[in-house]
Every structure is written in C-alpha cells, then in structure tokens.
Image (tube, rainbow, N blue to C red; front, side, top):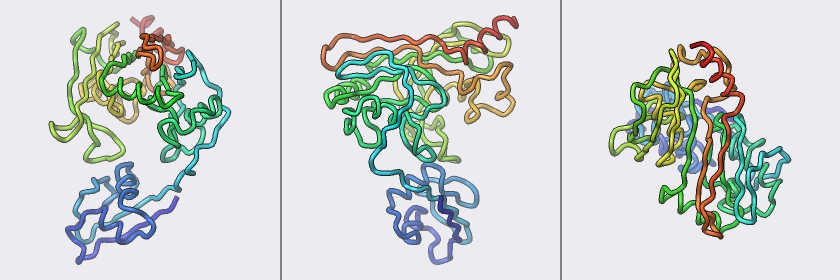
Length: 309
C-alpha cells in the first residue's frame, strides 16, 4: 500500500480534487483516482469527499494507493456449497465471510476464484475479474447466489435482473420492534456524502431508486425477525433501508449504532441470509426456484430470542 500526503497550494484552490490529484500523482488515471475516492482511499483533512469536491488552500489531501490486482483471476480450490448446476447456470449457497469477487483488500480467497477452479469454462463469461457474476451478496451475508456459466446465461440473467423478474428473498433479524406487519421501503440509495465507503438513503435525484418489501415474522422485546424481498438490487440495499428506518440488521457494524452492535448471542457476520431465489432458466425457459434454510449462525440467535420471551 502506497501512502501520499500533500497540501493544497493557493494557486490550485477551486479545482476538483480528482483533477488536482491527477496532475500530481503520476501513473494514475483520473478514472482510477475517482475509484480510489469512491472507495474511501482519499481523505481531505481526514474526511472522505466526492471526486467533484473543490479543494481549498491549506487542505491536506491523503491518498492510499493499494496495489492493482492481477489482470487475470487465478483459480483457487475453495470448497463450494453447490445447490444446482447444469451446462448454463450454477446456484451456490454462500457462507458468511466469503467475498464474492476481488476488490480493495480482497485480492485472493474469493468466491469468483473458487468458481473458476470448479468450472474453468466460466472464464471470460461477463468479465475476467468477475467471471459469471450477475449479482452479489455482501461478504458477511450468506445464502443463495446464481452464476452464469455461458454467455447466453449471462445475457439472460442480467436482463432478468434489469427487468426485476428475479425473485430474491432474505431472512433477517433486526434491532427494535417494527410497528407494521408489512411494508414497502421506497427510498433512493447512493454513496454517503460524508463517507464514500458507505451507502446511504439520499434525496430524490441524488441516488438510484431502491425498493425493499418486508414482512414481519416474529417480534421480540428488542428485536424483530423478518422477511425482506428485493425489487431492486442496490449495494447494501436491505441494510441501508432498515437502518434508515431505525432497525439496523443485527451484527451490522457499518450501519448500526455502537449500542446496537451488542448481541446476546454472536452471529459471526450479519443476521441476514438470502433464503429464496427464483429465475427463468436461460436455455429451457422454465422457472427455477431454490431455497436455503436459516444457517445455524443466525438460528442460534433466533433460538435465544424465542427462549428469552
């Protein structure tokens, strides 16, 4: 990791921070700098800013430059939980703690590398660094994920996601008692203006439309067990929407307050599990439906809450 620290001189005041850096950090394109800013690797007087931030004389700009991952993804023999596999699609049950594809700080040990070792023919489907990936689960979220093994499958599944016909249902334990039995959260999501590593509910026009449907399954003294269905698929969508409503997912250190991070039983990740997945098979055109039971890491917390009533 390369670290740089610079101070804005008077003659540069008013420039966009991405342009200011592009002129002073050789070897980095403006696109790469914008990505570093979005990922939180650039700080202005200790705070994250947008690429469009106008620099002010005397501001200290600190930059972390992580090494670029290799152009080609290396296969890694990592155990996979295969739910279904045929010539076109691969449905997996991802454990919590496994990153889906390489990114900042996660060059190796990813689901993508494991799938490449399992099915070498997937190389080049969709992208060299993200072979076969049409949607993701957060590192600390477990559950069902479908991957495309052929270009036909990739085109079909991505089109179904855009058309919002892929059914994705999650089970979650959240802090607090949701007052309504069911509801729809329809609020735009975009990068947090104060911390570019986080997402946040934004004002209209400042984020992308995000819609989450939820249904309460059980209520406890300080927690709620619920089902959430994605209509759209924004980054961290369920976590951001529920936290914005005052009910962050249990175990979420990013969007939950410090007080609410404490749990009566450790969860080992987020209390969030992708329990159901349905889509139209790219080749047969038949509706495919899959289910994954709540894993023990979340089941232990649910059992504790039921016995503590």
